[in-house]
Image: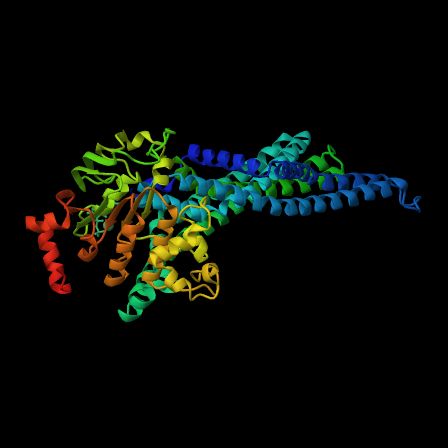
Length: 605
Ligand SMILES: Nc1ncnc2c1ncn2[C@@H]1O[C@H](COP(=O)(O)OP(=O)(O)OP(=O)(O)O)[C@@H](O)[C@H]1O
Ligand SMILES: [Mg+2]
């Protein structure tokens, strides 16, 4: 999508964001927020009380005859007490509101973050493999702190609205022309403030892909453990630094020019404002000269005029900020607009023990936003308890096949049946429960060994953890850890966490899959870092361990693949051959060719 198209938000979109934010704020901390809002209203009214007390005091003093008065009267004492109390109350209210807001902020941040996390985790894999969604998600994550800013803005804006209305009402009592002058004088400030919200926001929004790119380089150099080795050995540091510099130079240039323009605008708007204030003061003094108001009233009026103009300026400024925050918040609206496409209304359970197995019937698949079919007319049945291996060149569609089988995606055409029932007719949770799967890019959880294994099925009894670790071969190194299963893996959360080798991590991941104990077990090349001999041993054991279970193994190693009951050979999205190792070898087709090629290097027979 073109950046220019998404830069500016319509009034309606901003309004929607504000409404959504208000709703969240009230839901996250209803009581505290109500109290804060009431305090804001009181604070807003109190602003005019002080100048009004001045007026009363001055008017009273001017009526006194100083030649005869010798003591401070009871009236003066009363006025002063009221004055001091108002000042105290006003200060206390703002302190109290600040304190309450701190506690509310935490609640709101937690509420919105958890809402976002819940939403994101409900989305399909498809969304995460889509860069447009990633862009929205990035913006939403970046905008998270804005939710507390928008809260602050709401509170302030409410206070200024109350102040402005109170002042306006008081001014109108004196002379409507004064109100008119101060209102007109403030209009330029309104426009300038609104303009600023747009400028600032479009920098953030319009440049988001640029900023993402900049962030990527920064992370690559600063914090990416995996990249360090390559960056050092290929001497890439300067290349990435200069890419990063160029990007930032561009952002800074744009920002500078926006700020420069804004300085001039503020200068002019402020000038127009004081000219109007000037005339409104002339008008007030004129009222006094004509004897229409007292000297106390003129002090009151002057205070109101300045207060009004201040409050209005502040109001516009906060309104601008509110607008800006609302625009940031709109990135949440964007994320919340994404809907999961994989429907999940069924509660149907998968039979505890499959009797017919899994069938792919004329299955075609292409990734969303792509025209090319990556799976073409796949027809295959995997019987219960069968041991299947899938081989094929990179990009032939093996992982995609598994993604469909585990319903991370829905087929484009054709159907997948589990025990003669369409996979879509089962509860999605059931499908995921019955399939244990370890992908090529499995996760290395920053957690203890125990948890890393237990994450396979958090509801299963811990006593099977050891058994799973032994089966996967992970116990061979776990037994050397001082803390055994309580040893912490990874160094992000725990300082003294253990660093594992690629192959060791894979064994932990395999233990996790075994621990899940599901009737269908799929391993998508999680053994690539395990040496050939260890892989061979592992799968020999695996075959014994998984007797009665349906297993699918994807591997590029024919020493392992040949052990399978049946081998499916894929090429460019199609199944080109299938059968046992023996059958395929005697067929002298693709499998035979690939096998012989590898055998030459490995001396396999
Ligand atoms: N998320 C995606 N969006 C679009 N195309 C994709 C996506 N994932 C994979 N592809 C494409 O689908 C095809 C099949 O990919 P797949 O990952 O299934 O291959 P594979 O057989 O598992 O390969 P490898 O042996 O390298 O793991 C490839 O051409 C790939 O470019
Ligand atoms: Mg793959």
